Image (tube, rainbow, N blue to C red):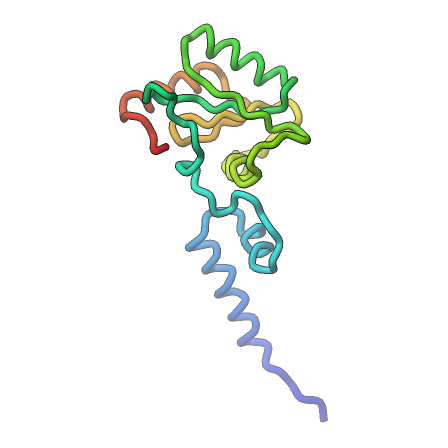
Length: 152
């Protein structure tokens, strides 16, 4: 007679694991499960506050712009930021760039809709904005100035 394994404890264990990941970990439960299986997910546990250069050398907040070198939305944003006098730093996130993969992963995971090939991603005031307007960047930048420079 075949041995029967009760499925209830296995099902409850799986539910507890998924609930624990969802409750204690950030979003992206499917990526957390992949990480538990040994798949590397760059940036999954990197907090945005750990990303360097969010403050310029003079101590003022700085906008980080991510995109490929020849990304029209990123180029337009940088031109507008220069016009407005908002300090920024461009991070080449294109194929073959040397950007830190954990940093890029953390930024991409923090976007609401995920980037496309023609999307500029901006990190300002600890928030990631995907294809933002100049007005949304200015608002976050003003909030960053009002509360003081972010960590690092």
